[in-house]
Amino acid sequence: MRAAITIGACALMLAEASASAQVLFPPSPFPQPAPTGAQTRTSTELRSAQSEDSGIGLEWVYITADIGGAYTALGALGQSNLGLAKSSAGGMVWGVGAGARLLFITLGARMRNYQLADFTLWSIGGEAAWHAKLGHWDPTVGLRASYGFLGSIDAEAFSATTSASRKDFTLRGLNLEVMGGADYYFNSYFSVGAELGVGFWFLGRPQLTAPTGAPATDVLYTMGGSTNGLSVSGTAHVGLHF
Image 1 (tube, rainbow, N blue to C red):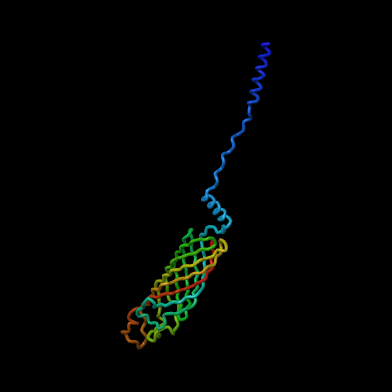
Image 2 (spheres, rainbow, N blue to C red):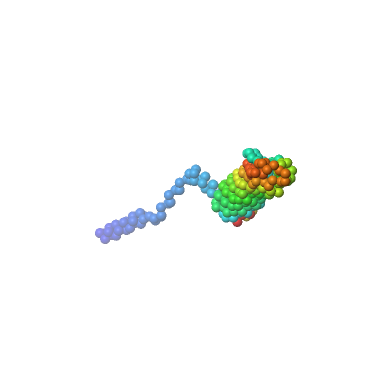
């Protein structure tokens, strides 16, 4: 009888242990917090930037050619003993340039020729510009500093007193130009654009050789002359980029 009671007690204890046994599972992950408004905006902007990527990489070297129109008034800021009857004219301007680019800054050289109605002017020098790349667009502002000089001049541009000495007539000095414009990049290598520029000319001429019969005391032949002028130009250009 006692043995039966002991066996029954052991069987009851085994049943209770079996009933209380539970299968253990790993704890469920913590719920993820909902994204904030700033995180949502950032994700949207990143996706938009990826989908609208222009594909334009870094640029190291540029080569450009431009053509357009210009008006130049050499005496607009004053002149002294110049000896010209016509010092203002309009016409065509063209040029070429090349240089290097580092992110938003370009440094280079440029040559320009002003084919005006009564005379031609040349400028050869350097340029520096700041750029703001906006996708395929590239707005820019910059400054040029050049050696400027007279290329050719029509006889009608001289005053009566200097006409006989026109073979000796030269102008040379400094040309400064402030410019602004924008380019559109079709790809990493090719762009087209437009530009507006305002130039400041500070030119001088040496003493002229007096023709036969000219008064020896005429200031045209005893001293040089100078002129300070302005020019306005608008050009279209194409560019190659590497």
